[in-house]
Image (cartoon, rainbow, N blue to C red; front, side, top):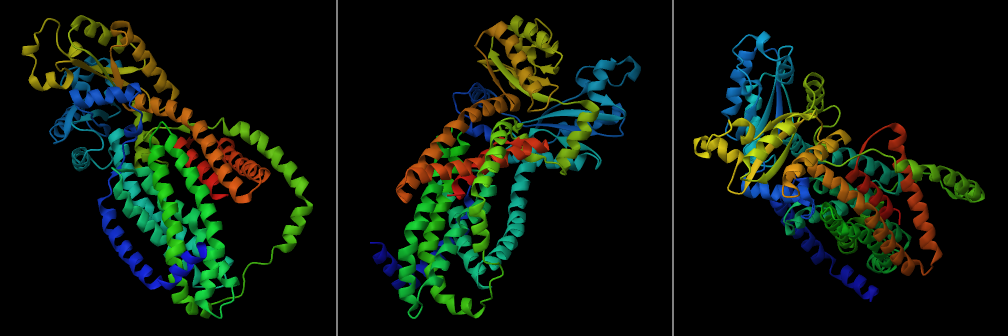
Length: 586
């Protein structure tokens, strides 16, 4: 069966080559229409409280992006002028500042110091901006660009909308940078480990083809997460390169008096091995589909599809290229650059028990310490890494004005006394900076018909009253999570469980809870699937177990390093790296 397929591929190689060229062209066109999703909340299960709240906010009001702008070296009057300009921008819903609470035209000495320090300090003014649409909207994107045109160059701009814009721009530029760095490294490694200067180009052509096919066929999905999109090419290159290397090495060992027959024998002998290797990798990635946090499904399907397309490219397209360009490959042969490792292997075997003991000594504490890693779960960890403008702006704003993030609470409309009392109690929380709602913006007893329609629609519908609560915390920390718990305790006091809560912090809390449950489930499923495949491949019960133990030891040691270096990690990065280690070492 395999030999018949191999003979068919060799005989029809020219037609197969033409088909692949057509598929590459089609994929290049389709890539432009793949929808990239930057909203991590999209992958939170609908059963989670923050997701339910978000869906209701979208139906009743609108999800809104958030930003903070600090303008330096301005007077109170000049700051007010900037506020008015920003508020007039299309896409900006409201701007929260000092003038919402006091008359800024009176002498500074008559303004409460506690109130002043939250909005104006040492000649700098801080504005809290809510956009009309969410941070993923092109309208919000344009509004941010307009804000940047208005504010001075030394101003600072942060917030969820800025993080999202930064993430989007980074994805569009970082993929190219990654490949520019990765491809030369791969070429050098391949030159050192093969016998020809041309072989690396052959390998890269095959893997490049499979990457393009994978990127183009992503059109079958509703959207692909920006995280998946940003790493899939590098992952495919790293994980599936050995398939093509294995085929060429097998071809080199064959009698080449008849190149076509040599290729038939090569495919016959190597097909089972590379299919088995690819299958374990695919099985491992498919395990991600079982995650409750459905970005795992997004990653798992795209990654698994990429491996399958790499396998297809190697089996069907590579024979065409080898037979076509083999004379050129041999023309540029070189002597091996790496020494023979037979002596090293013999010495290693002699030290086997010593090495096992060392690995055990390292693995046991690594297993414990890798569980102590500090993880980040939310979208803010993607947008502003150290060295970026977002990161520097965050430092400057936090140093001067502290942190601020909005939490949105919806309560049933009608009980205005409870709304007013709840708003007052929320504002008395030490962690709360400001509460915006009709209950504390409009004097008691004022009929709804007297309230300006724009203000009314922002905070009240037929079914819900909306509270925007600004908390003095980051979007992801134990302090932030405790703040949300405090807010919920007060809301429950007035409304029981009949309320909705959402925002960046509640969403991040739910992501953390779901992902922590997911990891052990996915890890055990992937280990079980890989072991079953290895069991049939090796026809041995002990070898798969030993192999998994070795790989898991490597994962524990690798993941303990961030703990010892004091670095926090994105949990999704941890999940991806450990997944790749498990899949690529089989």
